[in-house]
Length: 177
Image: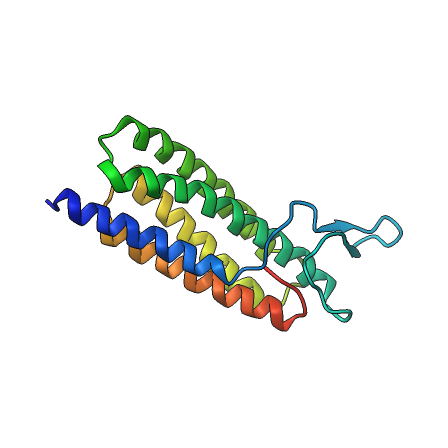
């Protein structure tokens, strides 16, 4: 059994890994891409996120959805990691944030897979989104089973790697994630 200091270190490392992985992400705005009513299937840029004039509309839509997924899941998982850091799973506050974090990861996994399955989306964008979705599912299962430390860290690190791959592919397509 690991000591509580080891658990704190692992939770801190995990939180840092999620933060570092998301630090490269463009800021997601809830309504940064909306359907263009004049052209079914087309999108219009609404707020601050830069998109190239020749950006693939399919990529713009999927990458915007994935950006929202990253934003939301980082918030709720971060809350869990913060509460876990001080006391582990036995603390009632950790139990509450664990449920909320798992719920957010479950939703994020579904939304990420939905973004990855956008018809016409390039495979180099879709593949890391799918792998990220599987990682989110794996992480929420580990949280549900109350698995500690390095196992959570390794899953979060892999999710960060996949998020970076998706962000890079989105940038190459002229948009952001």
